[in-house]
Image (tube, rainbow, N blue to C red):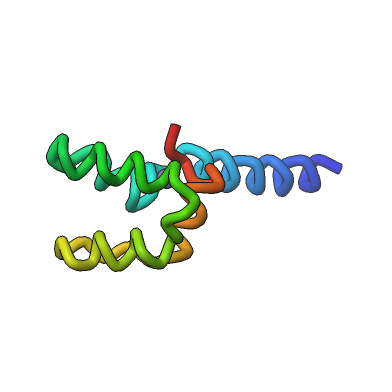
Length: 82
Ligand SMILES: [Zn+2]
């Protein structure tokens, strides 16, 4: 019994560690980008006529590699960003 509980606690601890994780690459970039670039990126993320692959390439041209799926995940708000 007792050992079952501690194993479960361990899993909960691992899970909560994940939840405390830092922001994704998009969030981190938004935190350091110049205002103009940041505004463009925020607008692009909200504009679904611009796909995630385009945003990924746009960032890549600026020397900031972010995978397309990371952009998509951020848009779906499945990352740790607020
Ligand atoms: Zn994010």
